Length: 116
Length: 112
Image (cartoon, rainbow over all chains, first blue to last red; front, side, top):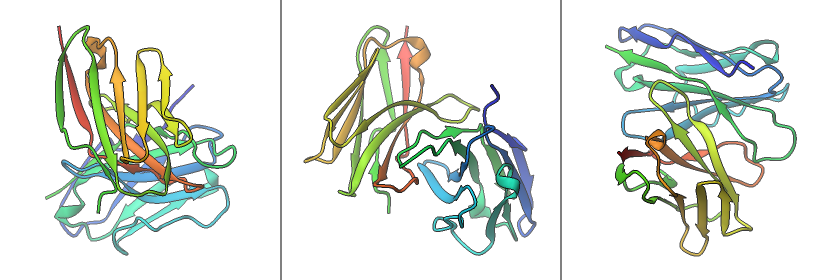
């Protein structure tokens, strides 16, 4: 079956512009996560959606970052007024969330964002 | 502050030999640990996991060892194969928290 897909695969933008990154999770997966990986760093948790519950936004680095998940499926991560330090690979993952944690997360290929 | 650390950014091993990847963590509340493997231009894929109630879990050529007192885990790959060349991430979670804390990764190169 289809895995997690993300678009675009690469995005180059100018400092100060807004960007939107899209994630299509695996069909039927109720949990969706966004992470980012800056150069030389591990994956950093950003936000987590689970069903109709309020998202866990505890990892968002600033109020320039926001995410939404429409209809419990597709998610969009928006970065406003991008800064050079936002340059990173943004990874989306989904999981079945069948019961209590932990839960195996399935990752998309990521979007490489470069802010000039 | 990184709670999961992989102090070796790279590892080179000959085909057929053992690869040992190490991971240290600082959060004593972590109770579930995972290893992910990542090829270039792909997302990480789940490899193997271990619960804190165990000290070893084996799956084919891959074995994960957990030393809770030392807050240390390791991944052994025996024998190493060229297809094992990838970046390996250690990750951990706490209780019912779905968030994963990741290390920075170790790039493994298996030489023919």
